[in-house]
Length: 219
Length: 219
Image (cartoon, rainbow over all chains, first blue to last red; front, side, top):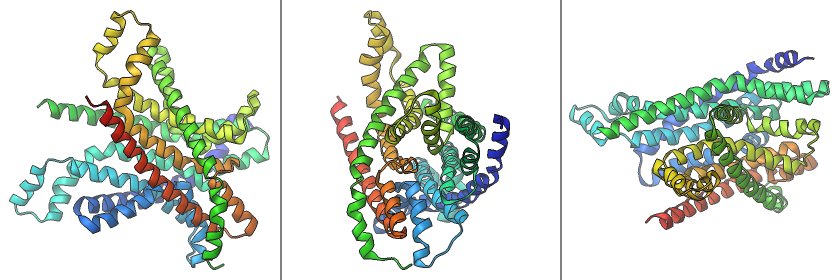
């Protein structure tokens, strides 16, 4: 098989890669927002508890999280599909990183924003949803895009729990025909096609935020 | 099968026998990634066309999963006459993967050095090599301690990937224990807890070193 044929074979796994990414986002985004906001709002013991949860998902290597969930949940009577386990492990790991971007962005806002909201008589949650989060979103975006890339790349590990994603397909093809050069080069190419545009977009956003911040300093 | 605490405790010493491998691989990968990343960044700045090539190379490294890069090194390199042992392929793979991120970190670090420093070096008649190693590198290091530390911790958390190419680090040993005893839950939870403690501990250590380095360089 020529490179084109191999690449077509690998891209058959794109659906699974995309699905794991999508379900991973469903775990990551809410977790990042909720955990980040909670860490921002709480103090003392509550904050420590929130930090512990975030650190658990963030500090554990994602491959270990995946294997721990995949192999040990059944012995506690919890049976989940490989897809759910993969999306959960990846999503919560990435969400843990994302939560730090949310918290940092909220903390870097001017105090006057919250005070203005209070002066207008808004509820604290309204201040969060209408004033703080929209402004913090711009600062969070570059990290979110970068974490999204990490998530897409991270999905390669679900090939180890028998999901037929692009990496799994590549290994299957490599077993059928002895052509590792063609297969693994194509696999690199497949991920590059998916992630390279996102990498460029992330850099563009980063540069824009930097320019905005420089603009703020000069005022 | 029910979870057995006794069995989990009994596998801890076995898994810990891989601790040294995990640690030295991490250190070797960090050194390799720093040297490689710095070289990439200096080459990127050396001339325009080489700059485009290096920019693309760095983006390719950042846009493909570390797992795929490991497969590539381990299965493809032998075809070009470079046969690497699993451990060497692993160290090289992690070095290459993190060099892409560190190059980006060094970029920021070098950007924040005053242009006058380069000009002063040139005015003193230093060679390019001397300017890079004696003027740029030391000043850059002070700017990049924190993000470098983050990537070093990240490299530690990436060592479990080496289990897929049969390197006997901690996850590799845990998987072997699982395969031999047909019980995966206990070794996985054990290795998970060990890694969590290790990652949190080393993270604290890196933060401490950062503070020390920054305090000693502040004048």
